[in-house]
Amino acid sequence: MGKDNQGSLKKQIIMNETPYLVFDLDGTLVFDGIRIADGLNEILQLLNSRFNIIFASARPIRDMLPLLNDFPDNDLIGGNGSMYRQDGQIILMESIPVKAVAAIRVIMDREDIDYIFDYDWDYTARIRNSQNHILQKLDSGRLAKAQPISNSKVSKIILFDVSSERLAHFSDIKGISYVYHPLEKELVITAKGNDKYAALSRLIGAQAYLAFGNDHNDIEMLRQATYGFAIGKELVPGANQFVLTVDHLQKLLNQFEKENAK
Image 1: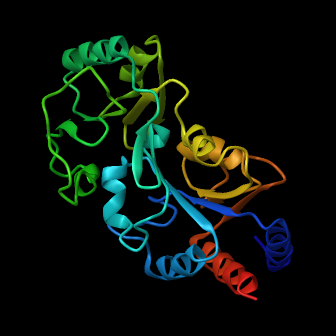
Image 2: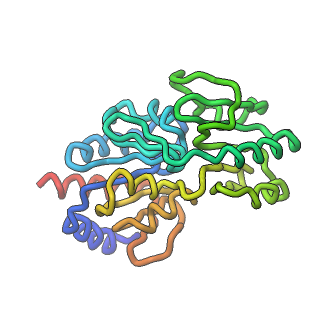
């Protein structure tokens, strides 16, 4: 984004007086799996005193909290929209249907697939690859308990080492939505209709918001925003959609904070 476009955009944002700013975490604000990048964390704390900042992540809320020590009271969307936190209370959207979970488990067992099952707070996991990147995120705050696997009240399932051939086995299961990450060969499953935008609508209704994200699970949230900002690559075409580098994101937020401090 060029300087002229950035300046024009800043003026439009300020004029809109959009009260809600919605941020994805990993790949948008978090790049090491452990913390929000220092420069971004500082500016977000300043913006947090003037705007309603909502964090929306593929992580369950349990695994978001270690990243958000500086934002203890903010509303949150977790598990790709399978749950949200409002006024300190965690609320589940629709759970994955029990029959769908049973069908998924048949395929898991047959194909010997590793997994994480998230419930409302606790989880079940089998991850035999000690180098799997998810291990640094999984209950890093030691806030939950590993429990025996269950078909009931499952908010999200992650399956690992799912090839494109294996992916086809899940296409006929009813009552689910999924996002497939081909590079990581990860399949993330939630109940049909659950996504970040659906959970956001529960939190703020039809109010205007700005959204920042970097992945396919952010697409509908970006599409429905007053302005959507994709970090690194285009996700949604449109006049209200912009692509930013991380440096441009920090500059935009800094300028946004200065203008709204006046």
